[in-house]
Image 1 (cartoon, rainbow, N blue to C red):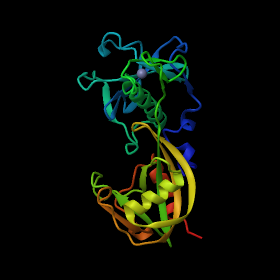
Image 2 (tube, rainbow, N blue to C red):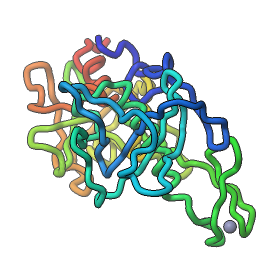
Image 3 (cartoon, rainbow, N blue to C red):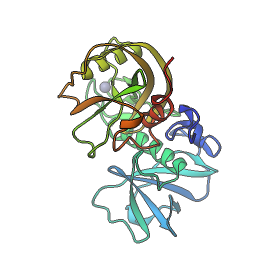
Image 4 (cartoon, protein in one colour):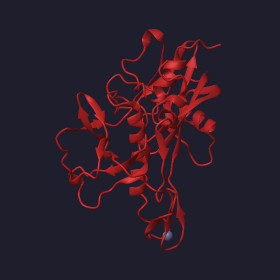
Length: 289
Ligand SMILES: [Zn+2]
């Protein structure tokens, strides 16, 4: 199997452990050529050479404009990584391409994809933490941390990472998948949703499955997690057994939900780089004891 455990999936730290060292704002940035991790909307802007995609390497590119140095969030084999949010107005120079930034495409090396995910989270937090949510004052960085402190009321703010659950429900060789209307034709995936106030992860799984599909579950088992930088979630993966109920689809959330089996697999599944697909590949066709 390509990813033996969920921890091996892209966007999780294990995949970049060998070459990556984290740097926080205020830490000394090593000299030398930087690697520019450029994010524009849902794309990473990269150099394409002989079909290979790489981060732009070197000094500050002039076309970024005056004063744009990026946010240094670490090093990759010793080279500083600088995250830059590109405006849609910036013209991409010849030799560079905008590559879709998601878990479906497989052209981009999964380590670079993971570094892109880090840059995306750093940039998203930076952009959405300009002002204090308590008093409207401006925020300044807390040295050696991703946190920020309000210059008005002194309140400290830290990055938000949102817990989500994702679950495969199994019933005698069948498994439950649903689809959202916005997805490509034929695509089905697992039931998933955000943790609510006052909930444990397990309670969230029971609620989401019941709300979205009308199905009751039992034997809930945690199987692994994936950092999900769109923009900043933690996907906690579960497998459960069917305990009762008939499928009643919540049309606000899903277009369809149904039981599949080995003979009736959906036309399209989530990308291999997502925990959704990893759970399906690992557990959907496993015989249930
Ligand atoms: Zn404040």
